[in-house]
Image (cartoon, rainbow, N blue to C red; front, side):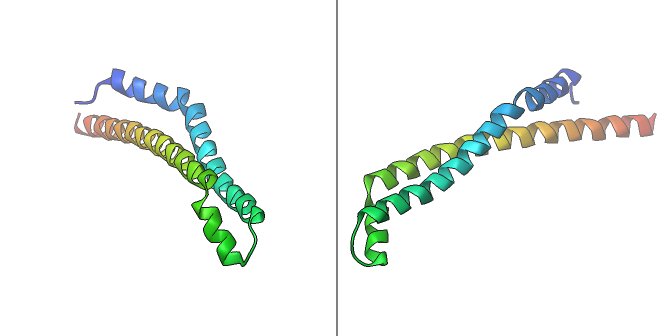
Length: 105
């Protein structure tokens, strides 16, 4: 049922895509932290109570842009994660099939 060529492709994808997956995860984490950084910078520009500074920071264009960048980073990270999980699932299913074949022979 499972083709060895597909298994080899899955292993190659996991191996060759490791750097790209790590970069996507790193970018996601960086964007999460940048959101906090931008909030702090925007709050620092404002006067008034902390809650007013926070409200204005959340309403700023820079904060909105950071949210958009975070969204892109999360999508890229999650797509790669899902593809890696699918490749691992295919390999595991192939292993199970191979073990079952050896057991029945």
